[in-house]
Length: 424
Image (cartoon, rainbow, N blue to C red; front, side, top):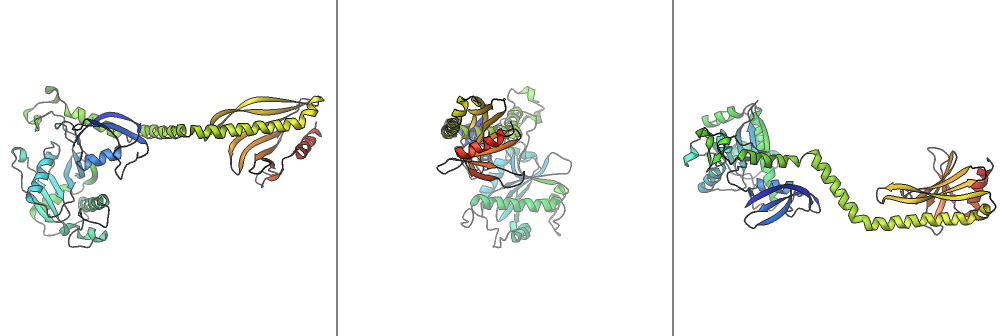
C-alpha cells in the first residue's frame, strides 16, 4: 500500500493504533494520504515506523527508495554499511519466495551496492555476495546456511530449545511481534559478536571467511534508514553510471527523501516532545474546565461566607469605631483551578494595626482549603473541614512541630483578637 506523507504534524488521535501506539487517546501525529483509497489518515510516529518497517506501507513514488534495513553492520570508520539484514518470519521458504524477496530489496539503489545482503529466516540464512550483476536480473545465488549452525548458543541463552528456532507465525505461546523482535535481537547479537571478534568459528568455507573479515571491527545498528546517493534515479536505474548529477534531472529523490527523513527525525527532537506535552496538558485542562469552574466557584463562595460570618461577629466593634473592615481582590493560581480572583479581608484597628485574612488556596494537603490570618509575625491558619462547622484553627508552634488545632467559633476568634489587642 502506497502512502504519501503530508509533512504536517499536530496533536491528535492516531487512527492506526498498533501495539506500539503512543497516541491512542491523543498525542503527536501526522497526516498521511493512503493513495489507493484517497483517504487521509492520522498516525503517530511509532505506528508509521511499524507500518513502513513491516512493508505494509510504502512511500509514494517508486523512485524514492526507502533504504531501510532491520539490521546493518558498518565497517570501522565508515559510514557505508557492509551488510544489511532483512528479518522474515517464514519457515520452509520456497526458492521462488527467496528470490522475490531479494529481487525486491535490490531494486533499492542503496541496498544494491552493499557488499553483503542477508535474509534471515527461522530455519535458513540466505547470504548474498553482491557483485552488481543483478541489474539485468542476473541475480547471484544465495549461500544458504542452517540457522542453528550459528545461532544455537544464542537460542539456548533465550531458552528456545527446539529443532529449529521455533520462531514462526503459528506460535501460539507468544505475541508475533515480540517473537520476531526476539529473533532480530538474536541475529543482532550474533553479528555483534562477529564484528567484535567474540564469535570465532574454524573451518569455515571461503565465502563465509570473507564475510567474517568484511564486518570485523565494525559496529551494528538496528532499524536503519540509509541515505540515498546524490544522483537522480531514472526508471529504477542509478543515473550516476551515466555521469548524470542531480542537476541534470528535475526529479530529485535525495531531496525528497531527505525532506521525509528530516521530518521523521524532527519528531524525536525536544521541540516536538515539549510541544506534544504542552498540547496534551492543554487539551486535558480544557476538558476539565467545567469541573474546575464548579470547584473554583464553590471555594470562592465558601471564602465569602467565612468573611460574612466574621463580619457579623465584628460589626458591633466597627459600629463603635474600634476597627474597620475592608476587602481587596487578590489573584491565586492553582494547578487544578487555574488563575482566579478572590477577596482578602482586612481588619484595621483604630491605631492602624491590621489583621489580614488571605485565602491561600483550595488544594491544601489534609484540608478543604486554607485562609491565613496574619497578625504581624504570627500566622494562624483557618482550614476547611468536612464536618458541619466547615472550619477550624490551626497553628504550628515550631517549624518542625505538629500543628495545634482548635475549634473555629466566635469565642475563639475574639480570644485571638484579644491577644493581638494586648500588644496595641
